[in-house]
Length: 319
Image (cartoon, rainbow, N blue to C red; front, side, top):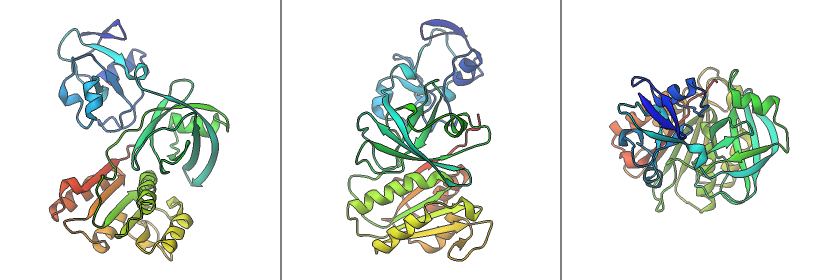
């Protein structure tokens, strides 16, 4: 099947998704989750896109012809496709600090040339000088040009290895536009239950801090889970927030080890036993895909409206 990719003829197999087909031919399209969620693999086509390839995108992205290449299988000749990097607005930035937070988690601070608009709970693509790109959630509220990220370093993760082995303080990097719908709505009421595993804590910290900055006075519960105690991080910071705000409660959870002051078990199991879950509860789920899917289904079966459930599954990309 012939298509035009960046105005050049390319042959693709109709049973192969466009991401794999193009990368096999050297296109070097970024990707992460391969599940139509992270937006790293977005491409653009002028008015020739199957709507099934665009599920979950903002209307402005749909109108501009963006689609998930990991979800696209080409069935007809003549599709015109352009690399999303040509059209994505990118902002110049530099690395200002790196610090180990836990066994395999890096705290990264990046300073941008100009302020990037974003909402608590969203993510951006980070792009290095060689064009390698990965999506990461923002861990700080949108107050200045300094952005914070919690990045899991995987043994074969190219971007993580670049950050730890090559990138230095002062290294230049590009930051893409903020995306994602795991965000706070304009009108808020009811208890907030935030459940995260691993670096799924990053957007939840951002959401919790935004609520506290807004002087939100209803209960806010943040459950963070890890298999090992060493995988829990930002513990002292979150304990300090709990001490300073009477409506904020932080519950660290560990499923593989027992330790004083840490709830034993999986974060979502503990949350569903302890936290209030009524019609007006707002549930935020970030982290391991199985945790997100299990919790979303359980909350819905217990009567919580899907409109009150926001989620962001974190898919590990080991290449």
